[in-house]
Image 1 (tube, rainbow, N blue to C red):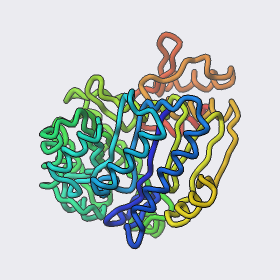
Image 2 (cartoon, rainbow, N blue to C red; image 1 turned 30 degrees about the vertical axis):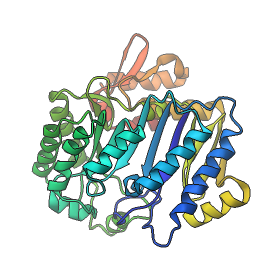
Image 3 (tube, rainbow, N blue to C red; image 1 turned 90 degrees about the vertical axis):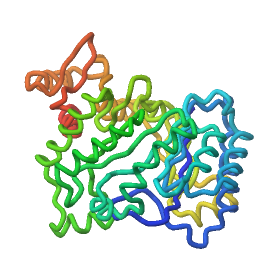
Length: 365
């Protein structure tokens, strides 16, 4: 089973981010840690096997937590689950929230993979995104983590940001490549509900242009693959052996448990979401042991459709036997248009098709 923890705290709220997050404010951190521990206990008592394959701390900004709180959180998880054979322990961190001393602590905690929320190496773009770090701080983070002997490092980047030029994007890519991380994620900015960016997009101040998106995508693909990174999913590139095990488990439909406010779980064909309210989350855990708010029973057809939508984003693709005869007819049209290809009875999208993956999934289904 995979385990995800949502840490919702941020120093500053970025105007493009739709994940549940907030500044710490008056949150009682001890109460928050205790709530996560109690929720872990509630679920671990229901599982025959307590073995965790991958552990992921996301947010928010998990690296904001103090070493004391992180140690306590990890100790509590160790009591409830078997973490002894974890294949990957990923921890999201932002530049300016850690130094070499704290990076050494990450290593001591057993973290095997740090995912850095850098997004850009252009100070003007960083200002647009509301990020609190600078280009110089971003460039310092990978060497710090290397000194601390963190096994794997990912850099998150973003393109098609308002005001971002193709030259700025190329410079950001070259900066990332020069740091030689093990993994680079290059995400196309999407305008999400309940963000400042969507408001400006709605008024026409910010424009989402497919042709511009394609130009940025192709540049990233060209530079990253030339630098030796394997393009294994629409937005993800990795050096050999460094693809994200945790994310791949989602795409392949493995079971996962999410702890913390707004976290999502899928266990035994049932999916639920925790309340996206930290104060309410803490109260509900104290009251009933869990914080479930939205519960959905998934049919085999639901799971098949979801797997198609996710796995078509990967270079692994899907066996043709996954599809119905009617869907195969639609797939043949995609092959004729050079948007998809088959090899050894396995369907994958071409680079051209990868740009249109959402539309292609809608076309097939």
